[in-house]
Image 1: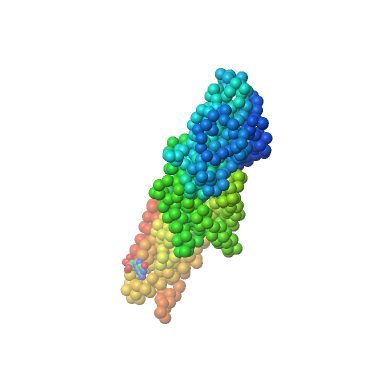
Image 2: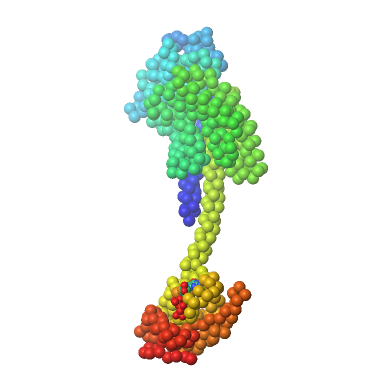
Length: 623
Ligand SMILES: Nc1nc2c(ncn2[C@@H]2O[C@H](COP(=O)(O)OP(=O)(O)OP(=O)(O)O)[C@@H](O)[C@H]2O)c(=O)[nH]1
């Protein structure tokens, strides 16, 4: 019952998480589709140069004018390049976003300028309820942003400070004074490509994200909406992680929950670092980046542990070394100052993960063939996950501008692992329940035997005093209900002490057993026989009056008297005396037995080997 409840509650929780994931995936696809539609031909939205100044109508400005496309570009650094009047017609053009070639522009100190002129409706900009804004996407490694020759801010730090912040999108108010009388607005980006290591690894310049001109609140809303799936992914994985850690905390034998929880927390952290929400933490960019890299660097180690623990296999020592190397890798980048170490080691880390792409599926495939159910559930999800990893690695290696899919791959892993764990624990609970059931029924049987044993005399096999009393009490109750009477017969072996002394205790035991057999054999099934004391037996005869009981007692007396008891070649005989009493209204069991006892006593006194009826007042002898 408990197991069923647990499985039910876990399933319910998973159903919620599943629903969230579906919503998340749906929303992401919707947004991806929207942004695809927006960017289908960025050149159409923006084209640089005096000949084709893009014009932003009122409607477009509300929705946001896409600034992605060709901007004027020049490597080098002149303060005059920010001024609106500067003629940039002889500059080359460069895509925004679009990375610089690897190595960047060392001859110009890794600094280059981007310029774009757009035309905006003057009346709209002058309106008091309209605030013009520009959103600048992600730029490697730092930049300053100018509009109408005014410095509006930037991200990171330009040399000589040289502070790298490569993935922060930021939105800037554009003052109406930045727009000239004809509505022309000149935007300029002064970009620093970064330290040589960064430029060699990443190129430089604007590389991703939104580049938009529009109404401030509308841009802000769009930005928030775009970041929502990332935030939801973070919340879902964080909840998953915490939930599994709590389960592990409550039951330390569920190791697989520990690894699953840690893995989910690690991914949650990584997911958060991929969103703009991380900047709300207000932590230095270096710290955020260290967290991002540590979380991704340590991921293979946790994933290996998780997979092996899920399929319940021992970790091979060589694999342990491989796994620990990731942990060491992840931890060692923490104390190294600056971000250079991350850019310098990323490729090595990616290469180091490559073997996993081969042997993990291979191991799982072997497990699947060996009939491991967890492996069967995990394998397709892992294949999907690895495919998304390849996609993401290609984005870095080949500068592909496609969507990063790893979070979705990880969702598949999460879902499959949950399913796997549910199946596993449902199976475990099922086995446990049937085992408990079996044990309970065994215990019940043993208990029954014990109860029986506690009611039975082990020498003769008839009821003992306690067992007989219980049965007799029930008979009394029945009699009071139905009015049917019964009789009690008390019988005792004559001169048994002498018999014992003469033939030995063992022989005495044997004889007692045989006497019990005779009593059993000569009575009805409904009659109850008990051993009342040492050599004394008692009988309860339902629906029998005193006379009927005396007749039976007489038969028993004769049977015992005529019986030849054989023991170790000896042929022996003995007699018994019987006291009979019928249960009457106003009696209780004790008074009835006492009457039978008195009759027995008188039978003994009267020469033994007799049946005496204990009348209500007085006695009568049967023979
Ligand atoms: N072998 C054997 N003897 C028992 C057992 N229980 C009681 N006895 C013996 O039965 C004898 C009963 O002796 P008494 O109570 O003096 O009665 P008796 O010798 O039968 O004499 P009456 O009953 O007066 O005829 C004692 O010697 C007990 O030791 C038993 O389980 N096995």
